[in-house]
Image (cartoon, rainbow, N blue to C red):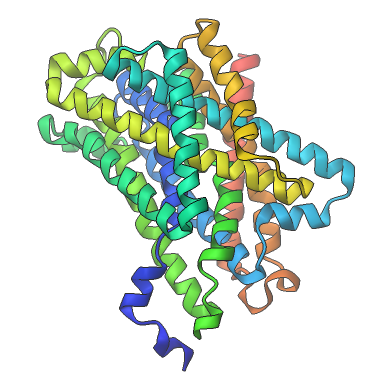
Length: 407
């Protein structure tokens, strides 16, 4: 039977695509939104981080399942179904999301290089973008498995730095538990909540994950059934996103425990200074190194996602260097104009949140159709959960727009 061929060793060997997706969940935009949320509102938005991660598990599983069962990515599915004009319009909004993503990742890497080596921000942004290309070349030259191992190594580095503060100044259990109760503290907390969700349920990773499973988890030639592969995928997604969720939560909790109410914590540079004075130079160094690893790894994932969107929707592929140059220009402009980098990071995550429904709604529609997925179409309860996620995101974004432009 096919199920007998899924040995523990093979199960472990098939893990990996979700970890590539997960690194985008701990990019510098996440750092900025979670640290800002903790520093300004304490534990108030803990529930948002937990909810966002639960939603991300479902979304990324559906994305991986679509690619595996159909043999094509979400963007390719849409590119094959949409007429020319809607297809181009859809691609344009996806590119805006990709640019917002790249801005967060490149700016974050530039901030980290400035903290570590006192490099000018523009020079740091160029270096970050260049190293991201080198990471992508690992996948091109040595295959997706090599890229997965590289990304997992970066995740390990990020984990060390982001978790260090928890051991130096552990959170208080009572306020932490109270933060699990859904609540807001004014319009700014809604803005940050939207940013947290945008930085967690990231639209570009929804597109990318479906393409990763097309090539990585297609084990039918090895005698594995689709059911076997879906079982592996569930494990892959849960493990990867638990790790990402713990890291995101640790950022908010450390900020709530150590930075709340402190002046200067509205920027990552200010956070680094306060961490140095309160938690020690060692923790501050680990934080900066992890921020750099976050920027370098996530910018490579963002570039790959943008290329996949263009390939699927426009049936067009341009050299990665050209694409890298185009998408990094907005980050360079932001830095050249002197716009506060940390504020730009938070706004970029809000833009991502606005793009989630445009990726999520088609994903749910496609994975719920037996004509597309066959016997692997979503169960009724899965559909209820997926539409609930979409409703929460859309409602939060509408509330954000109302509070920002009306109130």
